[in-house]
Length: 418
Ligand code: GUN
Ligand code: FE
Image (cartoon, rainbow, N blue to C red):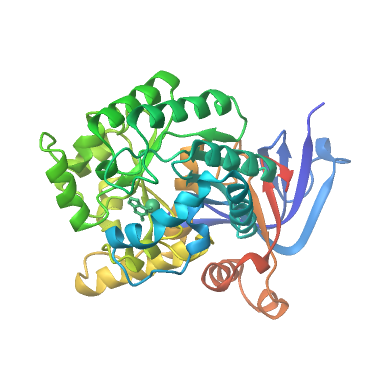
C-alpha cells in the first residue's frame, strides 16, 4: 500500500532560476514521499487519501544550506570584527575543542539542530568538529530531527592548536569509523571534510581522497576564501599549481561529488577546473562580509555555467535562516553592479533557486516541486493584512527579506511532516 498525502495551498518554487512556477489554490500529491503532481483539485484516484489543507498559506521547497559549522553555532554573532584567520584562532578553535566532551556536544548540537530545522533548512552539508565522539553525537541528534544532512568530522593534522588537531592516523581512523557506522543511514550521511588545505598535511589529504573514492563519499571543504589564506596555501604546497590543485591532486575535487565553500578568488584555470569537475560552490555572503573575505563574483560564475548554492556558514555567518543568505547574496550582487554595470544583480528568484533547487541537486531530487522530486517543503504563515493584499510572489519576497522561524508553520521531509 502506497503512502499518499494530498497537500492543499498555494505552491511557489523555481524549476529554473529566471522565474517562479506558481500554483494557486492547488493540490499537491505526494506518493511515498515523492511528488506525483500538482492539480487544480484532488484527482479521482487520490480521493479519500489524507489531506493537509493549508488554505491561503504559501508552500515552498525546504531550504538547502550547503555550508555551515554545527560546532560554531553558540558563537554566532561574536568576534565579528576579526578577519578569518584571526577569528579562527581567537574564537573558533576554543569553542570547537569543547565538543570532545560528549555531553556538551549533545546539548550544543541539540540547540543547533532545533534552530536549523525551525528556520526551515531541511537539507544541509555540515561540519562538526575534529572530535570523532562529538561528531557521532551530531549524527544522532540530526537523525532524531528527521532532516537530510551530510555530516563531516573535521580533519586537521597541522597548523592549529594542539588541543584540536589530531595525528594523521587518528584523523583518518576516526573518519573511517564514522563512515562505517553511518554510511547506510537513510538521511544523515557521512561526508569527507578536510577543514581546509592549510590545516592538512599532504598525507592527510591523500588518505581522505582515498576514503572518498573507496566508499563513494562526497567531499566538502573551504576553497579560496581569503587572500592571506591563499598565500599561505601557496607557501605550504609548493608543488601545486593553485589552491584547487591541492585538492584535485588528492582526489578531493570532483572525483566524487564535491562542494567547496566560498571560491571567491578563483583564477581562470581554477574556474575551468570547477566547471570541468562539476563542483558545487557554496556562496556564503554573510560570512564573506563578517570576516572580511571578499565578494564572490557570482554573476560571472553563473554566466560561465558554474553550479552555485548558498551557505549560512555559521558562525562566519551570523544567521542560520537561509533566507538571510538569499538576501545578502542579492545585496552583494547589487554592490558589484554599482561598480560594474555589466554585472546584473541577482533577482529574487535566482537567489531562491540557489537556496533551494540548485543546492538541492547536491542531495538528489529536492528543492523543487516538479514531478518525482522529494516533497521537502515549508508552509509559510504570513500576516493576514499582507496575505489579503499582495500577490504570491510578493508574499514570498517579503518572507525571504523579513521572515524567520515564526513564519514557518509546518515542515515536510520526503512527504513526512516533522
Ligand atoms: N576556513 C577554515 N576553517 C574555517 C571556518 O571554520 N570557517 C570559515 N568561514 N572558513 C574557514
Ligand atoms: Fe566555513
